[in-house]
Amino acid sequence: SYVLTQPPSVSVAPGKTARITCGGNNIGSKSVHWYQQKPGQAPVVVIYYDSDRPSGIPERFSGSNSGNTATLTISSVEAGDEADYYCQVWDSSSDHRGFGGGTKLTVL
Amino acid sequence: QVQLVQSGAEVKKPGASVKVSCKASGYTFTSYYMHWVRQAPGQGLEWMGIINPSGGSTVYAQKFQGRVTMTRDTSTSTVYMELSSLRSEDTAVYYCATSGYSYGSNDYWGQGTLVTVSS
Image (cartoon, rainbow over all chains, first blue to last red; front, side, top):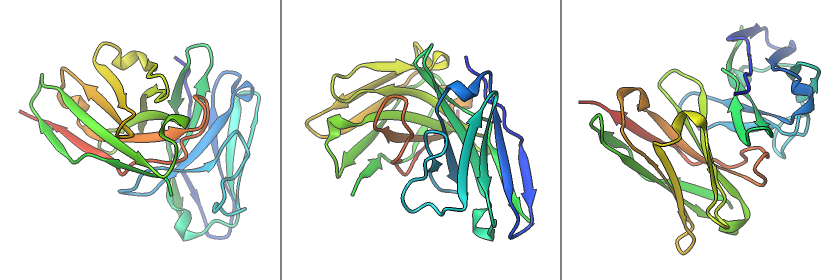
């Protein structure tokens, strides 16, 4: 199965930029979705198809995908951004999808 | 508005089966795929499989093949996920979630159903 690797944790001061990576073999050839999950809540998609942003998601959230790494970037981080973030891809070879292990974003 | 309402919490003994339902409203039921994703306590998200409500076709994650069955009832706009031979490691919150394409993002999620497996 296709393996996605995320750092377990990322810490950032308010107002700074957070970058959360998602590594996978040639992930740049796949479509990556990103989800935010706060405690006790269902996940919410914040970026889909690498870099598209759903309505209602602040412009501070952006995504990129190239080579072996996809990146979720959150600029001007706010306390309310503190959450777990997961990347997700669909593997066309197996018709399966998978999640990265998740990254806990801490706002200092 | 799109709503996915799941059935309530369950407590099961090891070896038993559980069937979780997910009732959809606010859209054409057969127009969106439905996925099942679970999350063990303190752990990450785990994709279990997908069902196409239009024809009922399914794809299951390798880990669950032989133990999971996903079905749908178009008359009630409800999808079901049944997991058999339960063990303690299956204790988790189970979510249903839609996608517009099999490879698309999961745009809408149910509230989650806690399944506890304990003797």
